[in-house]
Amino acid sequence: MKQSKQCPKCGSHDIRCFVNDGFLDSSTKGIAVGATIFSNVSVERYICCGCGYTEQWVSPGDIQKLKQSSKAKPVNQ
Ligand SMILES: [Zn+2]
Image (tube, rainbow, N blue to C red; front, side, top):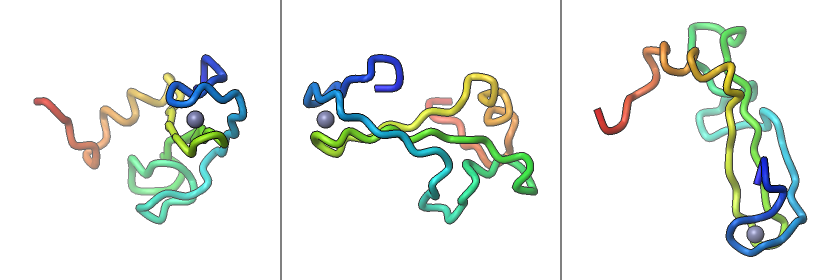
């Protein structure tokens, strides 16, 4: 939805974006990858107002910070 501006599930173009709006881990400033909030990674959440489908994106520039975090658990390794 970030790139296409269209929902892949229902086709709606009514998409809204929230940045660092809070997550299940109680972080309100993105994903906590380090010891302080200053190392947090920003997250954009896209929500389709047609069906409720959501997707989340991290800036490509922050992916290396995620990979280096001891809090990140690799999947498929
Ligand atoms: Zn939708």
